[in-house]
Image 1 (cartoon, rainbow, N blue to C red):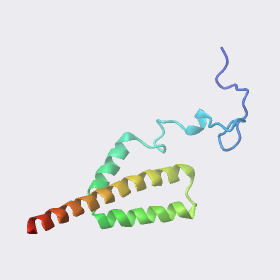
Image 2 (image 1 turned 45 degrees about the horizontal axis):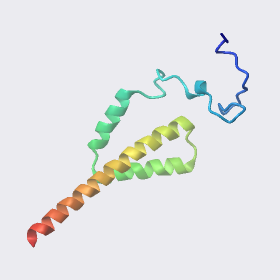
Image 3 (image 1 turned 180 degrees about the horizontal axis):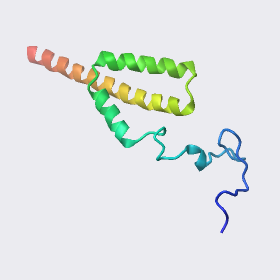
Length: 110
């Protein structure tokens, strides 16, 4: 059986092998707190659920600005993008709820 540390493929500093495929070892250790944990995701989701539409929108604008600036590393960019997706979904739910309330109010008036 071959030694898992030995490989015929050469990795460059991007974590890609000669064929351009991502090396699994470059993905990091799932137990590493820097990679993230389920508990922190649950806490972040609860945090987002408590935000007003305006606060969530403002944070989303800030995240987009940081991502467009390009100064964040890959891991930070992915964390920001994931939070941004959750914030955008939260904002959409709030807008949908407001629209339903307006529709119900205008229907009741007729």
